[in-house]
Image (cartoon, rainbow, N blue to C red):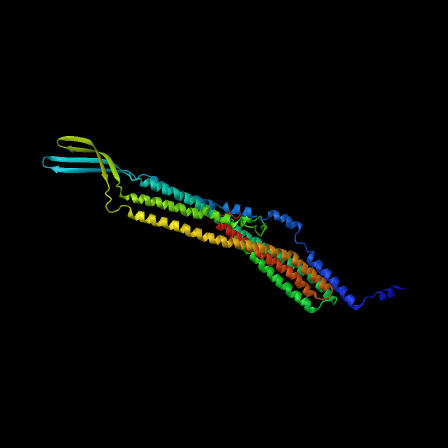
Length: 436
C-alpha cells in the first residue's frame, strides 16, 4: 500500500477530528495558563531587598521627631516638679527716712531680708503631684509609641495587600496574553470564531485597565508608607514589602480583657487622677497661714550721734478670704473627670475588644476557607472545565471563565485576609500591643 492510500485509510471521522482539535486546543490553553511560573529566581533574590514589618517599625520609631517629642514631654513634666520644689525667693528691702526738726535733722535707714515659709505641707503635696505627672508623661510616651507602631503596621499591610493584588492581576494579564496567542493561531486555522476572539480582546482590555488601577493604588500606599517612615530616601533600596497577609489567631479573649487595665492611656488617667487628688489635699490646707520671718539692721544719724542695731521680725497671712477654695474645687473636679473617664474608657474598650476579637476570629476562619477554595476547589473546577472542553461540551470562553473564577477567588481571599489583618492591627491597638 502506498503512502497516499495509507493516509486515506487511516483518516478519522469528522467528529473525532473535532474532538482531537479541542483536545489539542485545551492542552495548549492549559499550558499557557497553568505553566506560567508564579515566581522566578529574580523575584526570590528581590525578597532580600523588601521591607519587613520589623524594619518598618524600627524606621518609624527611629525618626528624630519621635525621640524629640518624647524628650519634650518628659522635660515639660519635670518642669512642674521643679516649679513645685523651688522655694519662693527671699525679699530684700531698704528704707531711708529723713526728719527735719527744729533742734536738728535726723536720718534713719533700715535693711530687711525676709523669707516666706510654708508650714502647711502644701509644697510637699504639690511636688508629689508633679512627680505623678512625670509618670503620666512616661505613659503618654508609651501610648504615642504604640500608636506609631499600630499605624506603621496598618500602612505596611495595606502595601502588602495591594502588592499581592497587583501580583495576582499581573499574573492574570500575562495568562490572558498567552491565551491570546493560542486563540489567534486557532482563529487563523478556522477553529475559533471571530466572536470568541473579540470577547478575549475585551477581557484583555479590562484586565489591562484593572492592572493600571492597581499599580496606581499600590504607588499611593507605598508613598504613604515611605513618608511615615521618614521619607523616600529611607526606602530607596527596597523594592516592596515581604510578609504574611493573613494573621494568626489572637490570644484568648479573657487574657486580652485582663490586660486592658494595664493599657498606657488608661493607666495614665489613674496617674492624673492621683495627681489631682494630691492637689486637692494641698488646697484643703489653704486655711494654714504662711509665715514670714525677717532680719535686718537699722541705723539712726542725728545731732546726738549715730547709732545702729539689729532687727528681727515675723508675720503671718490671715486666710480670711482666700483659703484655697478655688484650687481645691478645681482639683476635685479634675480628679473626678479623670476617674470617670477611666471607668468609661475601660468599659468601652472591653466591649470593643469583645466585638473585634470575634470579628478577627471569624475573618481568619473565612480567609482560610476562601484560600482553600481558591487553591483546591477552584483548581478542581478548572479540571472539570478542561474535561468538558475536550469533550466538546463547552467552548473556549467557558473554559476561560473557569480560569477567571480561579483568579477572582484568589482576589476575594486576599481581600478577606487583608480585612482580617487590619482588624487584628486594630485589636492590637485596643489591647495596648498585646496581640502581636
